[in-house]
Length: 318
Image 1: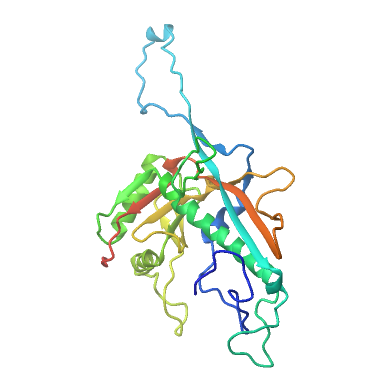
Image 2: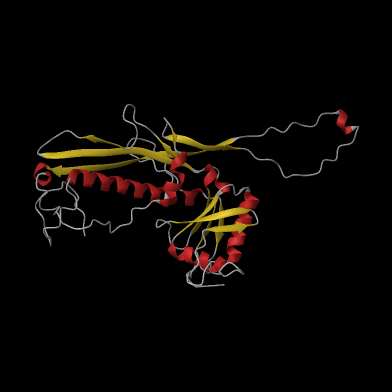
């Protein structure tokens, strides 16, 4: 079913009776996970953290005589990392004739059926909002960074996969417990503290994670004699507890480890309007036209808090 690029009319938006379903899943699990931490900004470029580093730890060897002279000072240099908010913008346009023809049904109907979308404007608005949410979910995971230099360029927010500082390459081998343990260890050695680490993955890798950990001794024992199956949603590692989150927007062959404790959406309000608002557009004819506008970006925190495993093959391995 093809969508219409343009104004909705009586003839290109037929009405149907029956239960309404979305053929495209509209769930946004990663966005739902972090949306409670939203913060506001009044600058499209914002800081994702200021970092400093220490030299390698060592044992001092300072004699009593040497202690009579103060050592050379060490001054710790700070560096700032940034990301940007970006625009999400949709339009809703429905003719007066379409809005007044809610009783005209196409397809099969009976005396028990009613138009599944009696208010076309509300229906189209809700779908536009769903599209924005799906685009934000995709962007927060897969987004590539771009800082606009002028008004003809688009700001593009950096997503979690681009921000992840630790990378483990499977080189097309199947995901295994050894690869996972290597990723946990490498991330920990890079500075990750596993405060609230979440593995974000697609369907293939989610099943592989369950296969890897569900076969451990004692784990797969059923709670009753009439229930089967295993769904691993939490893993105990040497460095902390890790949760598992399934997202349809993760690319194939990639697993993300995101420390959610430092991840938050950053919204940029329009004065006196807020963010992600619907407002009417100027009329040019017999149609209701609205725009939905919002600006949002991702504060992903330091890259060393996150990791990713890439080039995961599809072959099964124990």
